[in-house]
Length: 193
Picture (cartoon, rainbow, N blue to C red):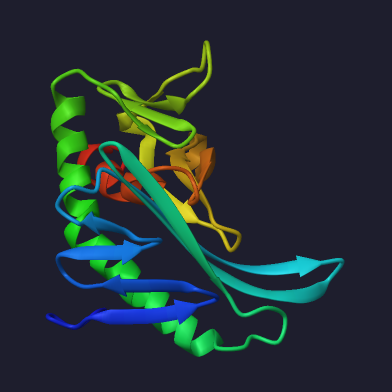
C-alpha cells in the first residue's frame, strides 16, 4: 500500500506518471482522484505459443469529459519489472483507497433506490445482476455469494448452485470500466453469503 503523503513517479518511453493521494497525472492530463468516476486496471503476463513475452501493467482512468490510459511494459527480458510493479501497485493502492470505495457507495445508493449500474459486461440492479445484453436473465442477490478473479484478469460473479456449491456465472474483464469496484458492491448487496 502507498504510504500516506508518498508521491509515486515513474518514467517509461517518454511517458511520465506522477501520483499522490490527491491526483494521478500522465499523458499531460491530471486526474484528481475526487473527480475520477471510472477506473480499470490490470497486470498481465503475456505468452505466445508458450513463450513468455513479458508482463505489462495497465491503468485507465476517467472523469467527466476525459479518459486516458497508460501501460508499463518491460518486454520479454522484464527490464525494470520490479520498478514497474512497485509503481503500478502504488498507483492502484491510491485508486483503491480514494476512488473505489466512493464509487461503490454511490452504486449501492443508486441500486438501493431502484437504479442500475454497469460494470463492464455486468449490470447490477435492485433485483440482482445480469449480463449486459438483451433478454439476459437476472441472477437474484439472494443467490450471489461473492466474486473471484482468475489469473488472466477476468472477474466472475459467484452464484450458489444446488447442493450449496458455488459457480462463476457472469464474467467481466478487469480492463472494463469499474469492474474492479464490483466486489465491494457485491459485499454490500449479496444476500447469498
